[in-house]
Image (tube, rainbow, N blue to C red):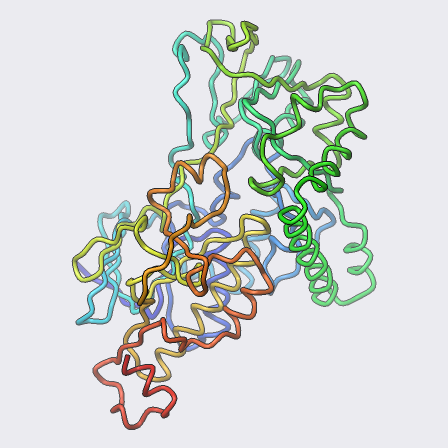
Length: 501
């Protein structure tokens, strides 16, 4: 079996993987790389999801790349526009020429003696293997082949259509149909108003409410700047404003949860009126930003409710019936179509099995170094974005950090960089969120601690300084020499001590 070799292997050709390609070309121009993508298209999430109204739940000035301005009118963009943006980026910078489609990475083996990863991928032509000194995982954090579906009693009796948004049927006809959307997260909040254009009525059935906040789909200030300033300058200024606001609002919500809660509910009261049962349907049991807020562009969800095209039911499902769903309260919701917007199944490293010198890595027992590498795993970085801000903000920084590390290893003739936890620290969950999909995946997500560099920061300003400018030699990252590297005496004195550890 022929094995190809590259300086860097990137796994995934979605938003993160295409960004990784740009940063490698820009910062490591002498390094070869390949992007291995399991599907046959660029875009990841934005190519997979095709349900009505699919859109970002972050503004595109921060969800967009730091190197390519978002120039369309809408700040809250629809899925096809985002897919177009990612594909344009790949083509504009020639990144698409580095992609191997239908290459599903299943295993990665690190050999210390070779100082190389052997990456195994399943393809239509059979199993292929690649060798690389450095592996950059950009495969997202959930399974594409299977969404989360709780066990509902009696689904086999339901005579209508039962659909999960992750597997949306092409050309679904819902005109004049009664639609029930189970869930209260971003997918449900997107689907409900989007389907009212044709459906007879759309009901959002939720066990408990989620915090919602409305924003204009278009950012008037951003559009004004773009008309009067060069595109990149206008984009950078808007991006900075958005980042500062996101961080400010998150810190405010965590430090003053009651005031933030009152303000959020007050805004909803303005939209839904004094007689709406806000306590039942829109007042969560948790504090703001203990789970991700749902974005409602241009108040579309609230307008649909006010106009009687949509409604919210807060109850628990007892069982499915032939005509719909029977609730714990005894009420029956009749439906022609039931959509289970019940969440994601998380996975780590794209589901790749990772081995270091023959020993399988248990990610659930690993610790995340700078939120970008795993303890005791050499030359592997993974992209995991923010939970309190746009994914791409952190993806850009992690890819920049990976490039710094690749260049450093090459410049000083080093074979590997491995995060080592040299003292026991109290462990904490990787993500400080109570959302169900994170709770279900606690056993596979790496751990964090309360102390850097093992702390998963939710702060763009901190990560900017740490990942872009922070010292690589921090006494935690262990470097080992390549066999052909110069002798210890030829290295700079400051590096001798670090390399000797």
